[in-house]
Image 1 (cartoon, rainbow, N blue to C red):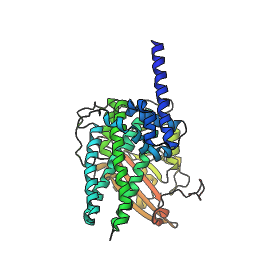
Image 2 (cartoon, rainbow, N blue to C red):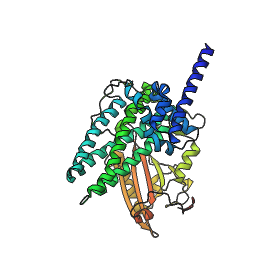
Image 3 (spheres, one colour):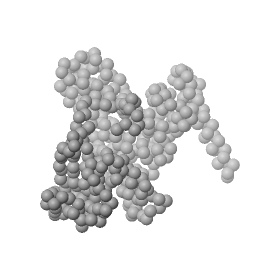
Image 4 (cartoon, rainbow, N blue to C red):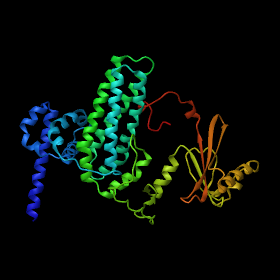
Length: 403
């Protein structure tokens, strides 16, 4: 039996190497038709999962992700005949793939409507259609933050990065098209941006339908799909109504917090060591103080440059005694309002020593809404208030230690 398994493994590996030769020859300049002629028998049996795996292998072996992105449409063209012929895995309403596919169908209609408005010079309609099309970003966001992380746990990371880069290209084109449609559009300039944008969106839909979704359905478990489904509301869906899952297993109940294991403290969305928690709080650009439900100070962050002085001696002390007598009544009113549910936050700002200080208090409540304390957050926002315009790229001229 082991000999049979070993032979099957060797055949799979040999086939994967042959498929990688197909991609490498495309990158070396061979045409799709030349590759199809040379590798016709090999291409005839390729699956979506194999295509995804071979791109991942090429990236692992050193091919830059942006080189994969540059020719990913050519890759698809080489495999298009077999992809068009393969049976599409079915999914029922409520399954994330069902929702993704429904959004694709609706987005195609919106894109067609936008294209018709642009060709007819109906600019008001084109602006409205573009705004509608940009709702499709919810589709991309769910791919990036829900589907891709799940696939990456199975070693599927390279193709995810390539697709994400194309998403960003689409987003940039949306913004550029929006600018061109303002005021009096130039039809030639609009077409110059819209045509490649429409092509990118349509080709991405094809890759999703014929490679990404079949490979994901083959890779992810029902529990993983259920986890994706319950997180979808955080990002929303576009064009279609989200429905209850009919083909997704119920997600496993979240594990109860466990004692510290391997130095990790279980948190709601991850696990950190006590040192990591302390360092993270220390490096935040804000001062944090936590007061429990009995008004006792339980924690303050020891940042390098605190705005207001704090010392370890206040831990366990009544918060009322940590403020000047003249301001205690304001502190007490905030705590009383939080405790009675009359408000959830309070906000102040002051100018001190040439700095503009923003101070916020937040009521901390558990899942049942029971008051568990107050967190105070103070921040020097002088620099933030002076910012103008945009800066989307890293300023390479500033050292890592620069503020």
